[in-house]
Structures are given as C-alpha cells and as structure tokens.
Image (cartoon, rainbow, N blue to C red; front, side):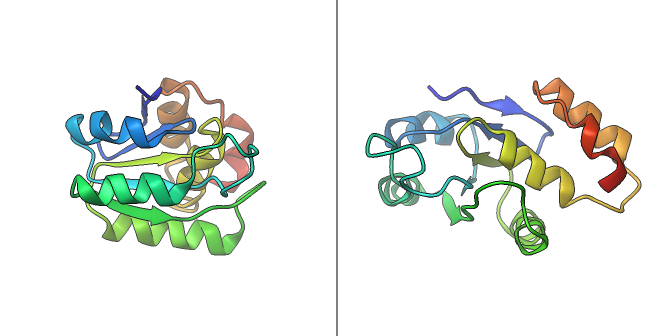
Length: 136
C-alpha cells in the first residue's frame, strides 16, 4: 500500500503509487487521484499514469493528470486549485515523494490568509513548507 499522508479531511499526498495501490486507495474512501509526476521521470521502472488511470476509472474514481517537474508554475497552481474545487473529495495527489503535490496544494491557497494553517497541515503530514510562508 502507498504511503498516504493526510493533509486535510479532503486532501492527502503520497509518493509514487502503482496500479496495485488503487484498490486500497478506493477502499480508503478517496474519490479522486491527481497525478503530478510525469511519466518516465523515474526511468523505465516507474509505473505509468495510463495503467493507474485505467484501474482508478474501473474503481469509479476520478483521475486527473497534472504532471510537472520542479516548482509549480502559476498555471499549475491555478489548475490544481480548479481540480480541488471541482473534483470529488477526498483527493489523493501523488508524485515522486509527495513534495511537489503538497507544494502545489499549498500554493493553490496562496493569498487567502491561511499561511500558518497550511504550514501546520503540511508539517502534520511530514512536509516542511515553512520556506513558502512568504508566498502563502
């Protein structure tokens, strides 16, 4: 089973998941999977989005591909915000380690006066986003 880290009641992150993880993700009550890791980033052994998407859709989950490398761009942040506003919750986002997924989530809340709450929620999931405080 994937290392799922709860951030809020509606959002969690995980390092790379596999097609075999999808059943447990669905059984855990997730409704949406967000893929933030580009296919092939980890080489030929990295699980591919297509297989994960197929299994997710077979289980009745919404699957959204939003792959990116490095820091999330304003476009990625805007798209993440839209996904989280529109897709069924709770959502699970994954990438290589979960860091870029939680960073995109945090930045999608930027300017809402919730910086301390966002940093605390991320810390509770094992991620230090204190360096993002000026952007939140």
